[in-house]
Image (cartoon, rainbow, N blue to C red; front, side, top):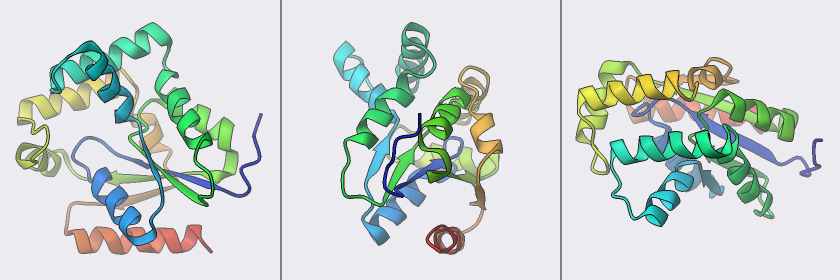
Length: 189
């Protein structure tokens, strides 16, 4: 049943690794000071609990293990709990919603107050970015392997395909942020 969130908007920023989700989230936080709930924190918390190093292999293993043990909605339910515990925020950002069933749960839970923005960048551009990022850099082979795993094992393509808005991030941050500003002005209209 849809709980009344007093017209609170939940905006999920979607995209494959290296597409620019974090850049968009950080831009929106800096500009509007909106709170963020990050799906990846569930993985990092579990890595810490298990005493495992943060790396692509362990992250994938934990992501898939948690979903296999507790169901595909484990991450979504944890994130919904965090959202429900945030008060006095008209807009809450969600980073890294992946799974199709998570998308459906959010649609059911938050109805029309749940919006999605997909950030698209070509594999070539994303793999270049992932290779030079400071935190958890990936080789092109690791990046492609992660793409395939997220598409095949957790059905990430569905939410991206159904996004309410899509931005192209194959160019500069300035170009990306202009697209984001345009979308936010429509959402806030």
